[in-house]
Length: 179
Image 1: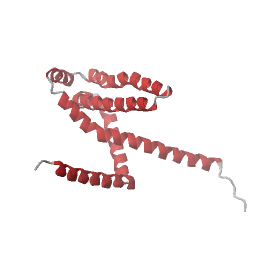
Image 2 (image 1 turned 60 degrees about the vertical axis):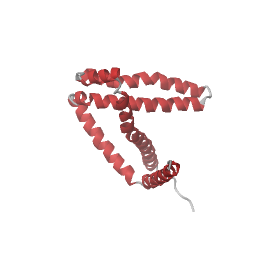
Image 3 (image 1 turned 120 degrees about the vertical axis):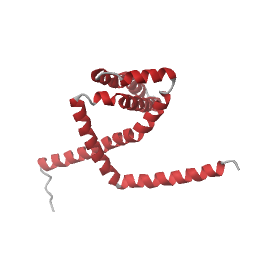
Image 4 (image 1 turned 135 degrees about the horizontal axis):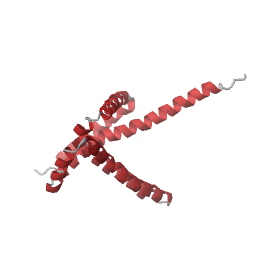
């Protein structure tokens, strides 16, 4: 029995769906990282921002006009790019663990700084009509993607594991508490 090979258009359609699924999964992971890290990291930097010199700086940032706020908001991305390139160079030299740790550290630090800056500059940025429209579209799209991800079996499994680990941790902490 001979089977006919799939037509080029069918093969292209299949590859397109596969690529969309793969890229969608990677994008979902990136958004989940941002979602999980954004608020806690922003709160951590808000706590650091209570230091006297930084408190003054944060007040100044909140008074920036829209385009100055936008420029400031883009600074961390530009500053961390050389660090990430250096990490890639380190990886190319055979130091995979060090390079990966630098990339992860830059990602966490960059997310923390961008989250805090966005919190401080959002009122000014939303005065830019194109930014406000883009932010609204982004938020709607991101929330729809997160809703899909939260319905997946992998997400639900992760939630079950997280609750289990939290219960075990609480149990261990109670066992270590002084009497």
